[in-house]
Image (cartoon, rainbow, N blue to C red; front, side, top):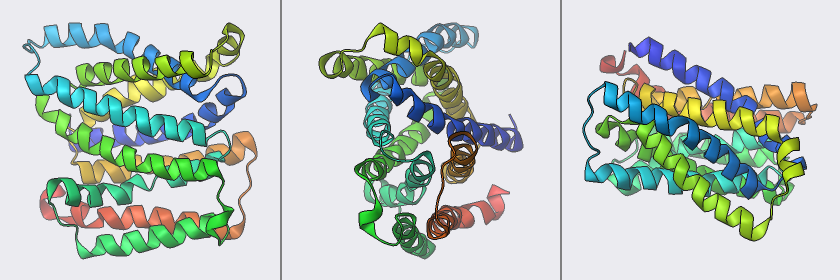
Length: 293
C-alpha cells in the first residue's frame, strides 16, 4: 500500500466515524449504552475472528508473540473505557458537541507520548493545548457551566481514545492488524456484555428497534474501520494518521445538522473552529518534515 492510499483509507474512516455518532445517539432511544457497546463489539468480533484466522494462515504468519495478547487486551480495555464514557455521554450530549469534544484526543495524544514514552512535545503543542482549551470554553457557550454531564463524559473519553491511538501504533510491530482488532473487540464485548446484563437487562424489543444502528456501527464503524486503521497505520505515521481521522469531527457536525437538525450558536461554531485548528497545529510539524513527504 502506498502512503497516499493509506491516507485516503484514513479519510474514509473519518467519514464513517463521523456519521456513526448519529446512530450511536439514536440507538439510545431503544437500548442502554452498555448494551449498545456490547452488541457493536460482538458483531465486530464475530466478523473479524474467522477473517483474522484465515488471513493470517494465508500469509503464513506464525503464532502470536507473547506481547501480542497483552497489547490486544490493552487495546480492548482502553476502547471499552473510552467507548462507554462516550456512549453514556451521548444520551445528553449533542452529536456536534460529541464530535468536537472527542477530537480533543488529538491534542492529548502528544502529551501522553511525553508522559508515557518520554517524547517531549514541541513548543507548538502548547499553543494547540491553549487553543483547544479556549475552543472548548466557547463550545460550551462561553461558560464551562454550559456543558451537560454528557459533554464532560465525552471529554473524559478523549483521554482514553488518545491512549488507544498509542496502543494501536504499538500493535503494528506484531503485523497482525485483523487479529489485534478481533481480540480487542472480543474483550470489549465480554466486559460491556457483563455490565449490560447486570445493569440494564436488555430486552429483545429494544435490540430489534436499534438493529439498524447496531448494524452500521458494528459492521462499518467497528469491524471495518478499526481494521482499516490498524492496516493504514503501518504505512502512515501516528501523527499524520491522527490528523486525518480527526476530520471525523467535521463529518459528525455535518451529520448532526443534516440528519438531526442540531443547532449551534455562532460562539459554539467559533469554539469548534478553534478546537479543530488545534488538531491541525499539533500535526503541522510532523507532516512538513521532508522525510514525511
